Length: 347
Image 1 (tube, rainbow, N blue to C red):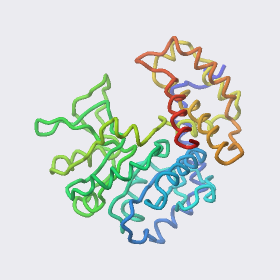
Image 2 (cartoon, rainbow, N blue to C red):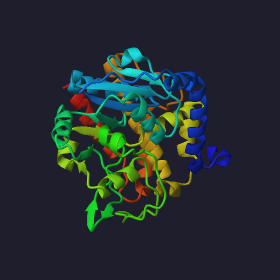
Image 3 (cartoon, helix red, strand yellow):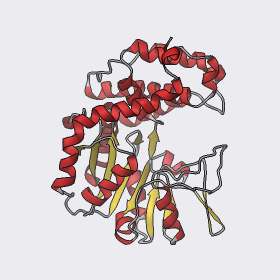
Image 4 (spheres, rainbow, N blue to C red):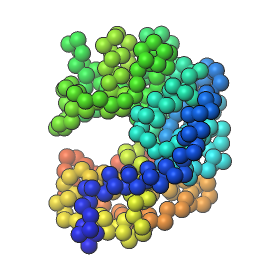
């Protein structure tokens, strides 16, 4: 049994470490060049859209939607942290290989180097997909106010700021545009996380950590800048996302065969499905299958995923797990979001 060899809850950190080492060998020289050549994007009034990728089919689908809905309204820059992305499959985007460093470090590197000639930088996870041209209109509308430091299309929901007797949603780092002239130029801020987050929690979580961009978000609010959170109905009409598809890339890189990947989910006690780790990881693989199907429709051939089990077998595991899930967890959202995404792409 796979459980006898490894604890299921400890696989992801091991997978992260192994992936970073492997991709590091592929990307190390390119990363050194990135820091030594000093080639920022040329000055432009365009919004600069930035993402990082470790799962190529994911960013290829993402970029297909970026081109469909935004055209030449944005300049797109991709850190390829897998070392496996074919730039010809993301035409018009600038692609640079970069080691799989921590996400805030990659954001800081881009803001301080490549984007130093730009004003508005839109940081978007590649599993948060544009499904409407209105996103750009929203950013242009909100940044018309010179006091607007950021605009978020996907805030954090499990805690909130309490500043000066008022409550504020954290902007998050999943899909946020920054006024770089404020963020870097005036305030010299960083995307780095921090300790001692004592703001109130909305859910039963005990973390006291500021995640990526959270501490900077707090400082901006304390200094009186506007950190806009786009209303939920409006942002849901503009963006559609999966959760944690990078997890799928890490797991598929870690396991050696489809059978071993399946064994990870099968060789556990049913009580394990009451936690967060297994449902989250299975959800990521189900989302990866949906993206694989969409990728195949766009490109014409499937992306090679040698350790991915058949979709039907993963779905069977999901059905088995359903009675044991807690806290409102389910796998239905994967298919609902996939349907929404396909309508945005193919209709």
